[in-house]
Image (tube, rainbow, N blue to C red; front, side, top):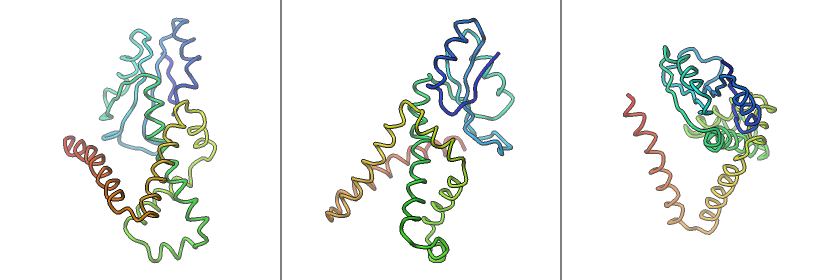
Length: 194
């Protein structure tokens, strides 16, 4: 049994297909947690269905004794969704700390007068800033679907900027309302799991 644990799958497509065609029991997984994770309760492991006989079931069986939540999807679906789960979340935080750094305001001064929202975002952005630039670049650049989430981010910033600069309170409220409705879907899932 051979499987990869990469963050992206489309760059591995040819190699995975060659292994499968050669009769190798080949799988592909993406643990959605870092190496410092101790407990898998509430953590996700994504399994890619490569139509390689019983390889998917065998790979999933490795995590059966854990409380990890198993998610199965196709290779392309994985990378399309990962463009948002990893690519977009990384990009938002890189944009956040880049905007702060370019503002000319010193971080200690901003933290001294910060709000709860700023503190939460700053903590996440600080963690992202400590990660590998090379890895994060590859997650952005090598994903065949990566441009989709970056375009969505640019369009969202343009919508927000347009509403604020034009004084369009109704449009701003629409953005907030749409965000509230969207994020309530995740909150509902968390409540059902609890």
